[in-house]
Structure formats: C-alpha cells, structure tokens
Image (cartoon, rainbow, N blue to C red; front, top):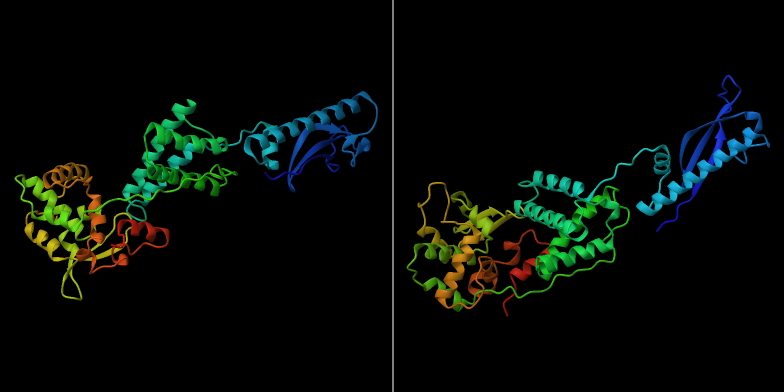
Length: 386
C-alpha cells in the first residue's frame, strides 16, 4: 500500500486584522503535496506569532491556552488521517478536512453500483448487448443479495469493505448453496468482476478485491450426435405431431448451426438467394448482433418447405419455448434409443462434428465475430472432427 505524506501547518492571515488587533489562525493540511485550508476559529495577536513554529510565543495564560488548543487540533487531524487510511486504504487532504469539519463523505455501496450497472446494461439491450446478457447480470445480482444476507446478515455493503475474502466466500456460496459447476461459477464470478472493475475505473475502489483470486474454466466434452444417431432421429416416425415438430426444429438447427434464440427470430425475409444461386439464411446473432450467413443444405430446406405457408406472421417453423423443446427432446431420445442428454444446444455441437454437414462452411461463417479467446470458445462448439 502506498505511504502518504501528511503535514499540518498553522499560519496567520496577517492582512486581516480585526478591531481587537488580532488575526485568524488558519490550518493548512497537506497530503502528498495536495493542500486544503480552513479556519481554526482561533485568533492571535500577530506580534506574538512564530511563523516557523506555527505557535504563539510567551508564557501567558492566553498563549498557553491557544497553543494547547492548536495541539489538540493537530492531534484530532492526525486521528482523522489514520482513521481514513484504515477504512479506505487511501487519504486525501480534502477527506481529512471534511472529516474534521463533520462533512460526511458520500460513500457508494455495492448494490447501488450494481443497480446502476443493470440500468445501463438494460439500455444497451438491442444495441450492443443481448437480452440474455442482461438477464445473467440480473441473476447474479440476486445471488449477491442472497449471499450477503445468508453469510453476513446484511442487505448491502460499502464498496471499500469488499475485500479478497468476500470474493472467496461468494464463490464458495455459489458452489455449495446453488451447486454451481466449475464453469457456471466461473461465468458468474466473471459477471461480478465486471461490476467491480467498473467501480475501480470510477475511483470508488482503490484496491482490487480480485487481486490474487483465480478461477479457471474447465474443459468439458459437451457431446454431440453421431451421424448414425442423427439419421435414426431423422428417419423415425412419431405418433405425436408435437414430437415430430420438435424433431424437425432440432434437425434444422443441426444443419444450420443456429442457436435457439436466432432460430426463434427467423422470418421469411431472412431466406435469400445468394451469389451461388442457392438459398441462404441471412440474419444477425442475437447474442452479438453480428451478421451471419448460412447456406440452406437440402435437409434444412426440406424442413422449411414442409412448414411453408403454415404461419401468417412470417414465422418459418412451429417454435416453442426452449424449456419445452428440451423436455420433448428427452422424450425423443428415449424413443430413438439415444443414450445422451439430448438438449437443443446439442444441435449446435452436432453441426460441425458431422462431416457431411460442415463441409460447405468454416468456423468464420458460423462465428464471424470470434477473435482470440472467443474463437477458442467457438471451437469448443465446433471442434475439428477426428
């Protein structure tokens, strides 16, 4: 921690003599070269003032009382200085002056800053942020509120009081109380760190509580369907129309690599004939607002043709909620004898791991916005087939 230089100097305003021939004794507080001045409310005859010593000269009762009160002021200022240093980790001359004068310093709390961050993020939804991103920040906000109540029995905390142990305890809470996996915990802590970083940039926190804290993402085999499993699902005849529709939506996602949210927003206008004379999907990823162009392979085109004209609002397929899709997919997996945790997100993994599906495309086609670490993440979804 940086060591501050702290000085207190008493001086007089020699050009401002009152009717009794006295002048005001002023206080100059200096911290790291930064100065603040204030009136001590004490007066002295300028003829008995020692500028070098910063005290009155003499042994009279008035002189002794004045010097004693100046000594008391100096002690009080030092106490304020060390108290501020202990509580905040840093001191300014203004902070010492305000403390002496009884001016309460405006102090930001964690939830106040987090709520402002949520408000700012919400305004960016549809511009530079996606709604799912906002919802993740909001969910983490609720977890932090819950954590503080359970761990410390408090409803909020000053930013200056957030230390390394707070971060460690928060991670432990997510893992134990909510049974979060390594990667889910990693993502939650990443969201929280962004809020803390914002407070640091605003000068509300001087010591980063995340200093020394480490958490890594764990490589996970996310799974995918083999060609045999995919063909089995495509060829299966279902007695339920709803299962058939869910199967079609899943297969369409397998042959396009589109995420659920992007598929749900597809409309007739997104199907365009391109330079090669074929039909392509031209859309923007909801998560990143990046333009994506995907060729319609025969199986995907066949599914589109199957539902053509069935919906009046321009919707291409019978989309239901992601939660309901995943419930039906588990039923489909049982019927087809697929012994995997079949979720809709598995379609995006299947896209690249099935050679005959990913031949016309490359990683930049599906993840055109991916760079660096983001490209590495994208490769987890689209691994190179062995």
